[in-house]
Image 1: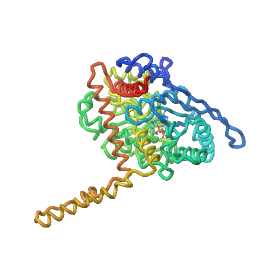
Image 2: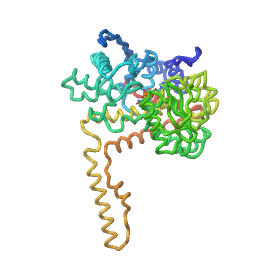
Image 3: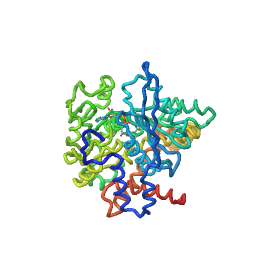
Length: 479
Ligand code: NAD
């Protein structure tokens, strides 16, 4: 729970359960099955010691498994001081629903380590990560067939590579060892496009939303993404990539960026790349030239805009600020940024919320592709790419021959030829698979949103789709 949340506010896990309840009320599930889907199956807590700076430091970590209706279970590992059991369980539940919504064949899990990653140097973090991984691996809580972590807040490619290596050291004959974790760097068994996948997914989700004028109108907006004013909270992995792609490729103006130390604003649109460079160099937003800086970052969530993109952490839009939020459209790039109470206030105001379980599913989608790549031991596109190019070349040559023979005067532009003659490499295939997933999942949610009179919002629609799929899997197992 964030400091700004009031005492009346339910915890993050309670919030997820309350949202679940809103949806199951509208479904025809037996109370037993409903309860089975809602509860978190298990949470393992580990306290381990690492000798650092001349003394033994004890760390507390968690791995929750929310649902094993499909295995392996999947979910990121978070490094933050705020990590606690309730939070990890809420995030694990969201993973179950998210995986079902975007049809990745996984159950839901999540892990966390109570640590400030900035307080330790790289070598120390490696020792801590390897030890945490060791504790989880020896209990099969990291395993290619049972439980596959990924990056989350405070972790990235580097930590995933250490985890993969630790697993390989402890399972020297497992030919599928690399599939024990996703989000690895490409040289360590990763996949092209994973780092930016969640931000890219946010972009594809918004593009799909704006393909439906009826939905755009519900948010009291019109037209396309071009020229829309967006406020982004959190310029980390998810927020940075979402802001970068939306501003560079879709004409969205990022009018404010909120970080831990305050906010930057510019009505003409901020240069996301330059702000990120400044942040990398100084550790914060303060001191960035060419934009207005304010110390009270959270207040900037309430500034006028077309689109609000909370991409930092949970609970930032809550009972204490929801009625002052002006954005007509919110896309939850972070997990759980809007509390249950705030969700109700915003809905009453007519705000459209594209829910987290859909909006940030790009990460798990590309993780799924990485897992499949690791199990198949071949990079995507390796067999087809040149064959695809040869067939395209055949067509281009035939067209050019026909034009010359018949004096038709056709000329294919150099740009067309280059694009048509380029076969799909791994990155192109990953983007295509991600785009397809985001469109298909949106359409499934939308069909419920528009198809039923008792469904008010996209969040309930998303829960109905995903709970329905989880229930069907349980039923097929005879439960
Ligand atoms: P990250 O650690 O890379 O970035 C988080 C950013 O938010 C950091 O720059 C941090 O300084 C900033 N931040 C933290 N608290 C803040 C606050 N109170 N106000 C403003 N800024 C704040 O983490 P991430 O991987 O980008 O994850 C962000 C959110 O997205 C989390 O909720 C996470 O669960 C969710 N998510 C991440 C992924 C992924 O692939 N990384 C996938 C799905 C969901």
